[in-house]
Amino acid sequence: PTGFEDVVGIDSALWRPTAVFPAPGQTLEIVGDYEISFRNDGDVPLDLRDDLRFFDDGDFLVDNHIPFALPLRLPPQSTTWQRGSFVLRGGEDAGRYGLRTLRVAIRLSRVEGDSPSGG
Image 1 (cartoon, rainbow, N blue to C red):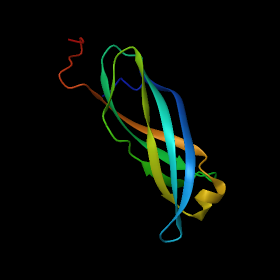
Image 2: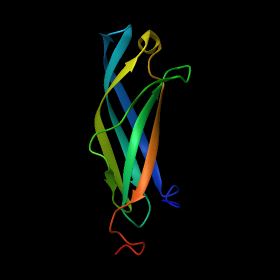
Image 3: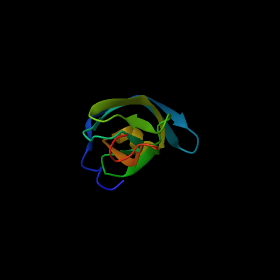
Image 4: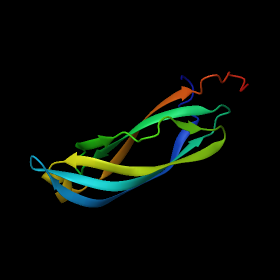
């Protein structure tokens, strides 16, 4: 919803590739864990849907991951953690140069049934 971009932020994001396996077609399967801390500074609860986009050192998209258990509920004036595992498919360069950047694409919506006055 319009106006909520300034009230939701990411306090921290951590991802750890834990294993790389050969996959069909000269690709690699990269497995790992992630943790993201979302902060809602607003006065109303919000639902968050996100996808994690992993890039290599050349800023090339390796793969993306859509977390399970969405939407994530963000209560007002609070911090909510999202934790999980990811499985990505990438070319040989992803294994050689690694994952350098994680970008989180976020879509917010007002919690259904919640009025602007919070009641």
